[in-house]
Length: 96
Image 1 (spheres, helix red, strand yellow):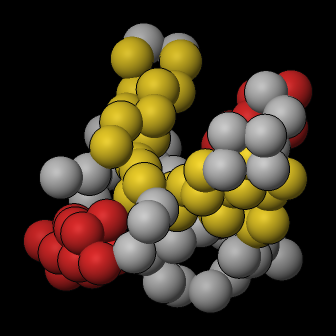
Image 2 (cartoon, one colour; image 1 turned 180 degrees about the vertical axis):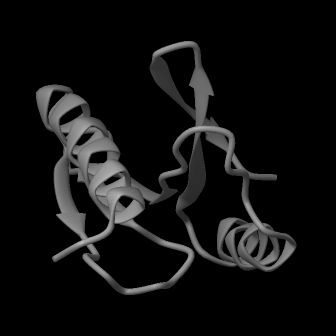
């Protein structure tokens, strides 16, 4: 049986995926991967690819996750993103 933390994270990933799909993105979830990338979102119209790390509650990017996302952001034509909690809402911010 999955832990409560896993369930909470999965719900947040589904929420972000749902919102992005509504904006025209094709979203791939990297379930249980334990990598810095939880979601890959592709918008063919905008020709944009987002690499997203979803965080819940008060958790933040680890220094290692931040560094990997920074490298990806600077090396490839992608936007490395992370979620930030604002009250009950999740907001996407670019990792620089």
